[in-house]
Image (cartoon, rainbow, N blue to C red; front, side):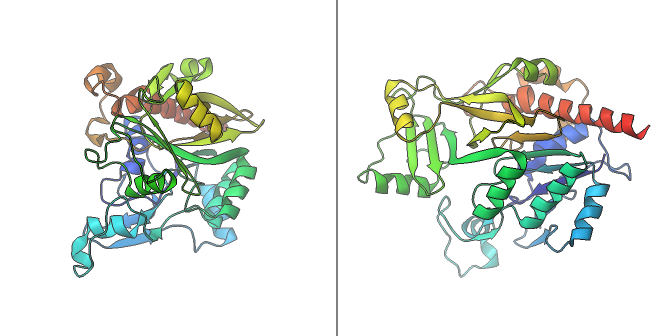
Length: 365
């Protein structure tokens, strides 16, 4: 099966933003037309670091309309993972030897971006894939920053979803003296908006609006349950083999879906009365879509989170029945993401691909 993978957020040679998808491809023995397995370091479009401070960009920006049509004919499916991109501070701090005279930037600060965002050609390509009844899987961050407002609106109209301008993430501690995960710009903007105060020391959830408004809910202070959970409907549980309930401690976006789609799973924020009042004030819902699917042909899926980014390894991808060893694969702490991969992402994406592949076989026979 010919798979078009797009990933613009590749800072180093870990390829973590699309590694989970490659794990499924390898585990299920999907191969290219030359019968080689998909390699995470080679078989994608986007940003390619060499691990020494240099990079190349291989995308479809130079393609003509005719080129895009040929690509859409040749590929069976498209998976767009994280299009957030690569930013100057992150890049320089990863490879400080490239410009040793440059002062290191503070990780977690905003900086100019080197590469990222959904483009007109990339949108045109998946429109062509849609017109040819090809499988499309997209996920956060595809229409948030740095994608332009115009491209975002076109995408929303094409696929009948609407981003509500909010993203969020769980943090295992909001104590800035203990955590390196919390972006400095997030803390700084919150303090600017709240009398120079950052009163949080426990775990919690931070919400970021596209104009950098920050809302923070702290465990116990505002939350009855510290981490967001994804609840799946019976169709996702029965057909796609996911668990009914799974914690999700990473980046997500808040969106809504139109009538042409159906919501197969939803996030739930378990806030207390004080937390509910804060969310109501900012029009942030406590329940919102996690997995959206086109209801008519099962060929478009939107994952409202950074689903393909999980700390896993390809080393065990060839093992048959690896799911029987799931209980050995993760710690039962709020911030771990391996359980999300093992119990939700992997079975869901495996079944999506299997359904589609069986359909391709039937059509080609």
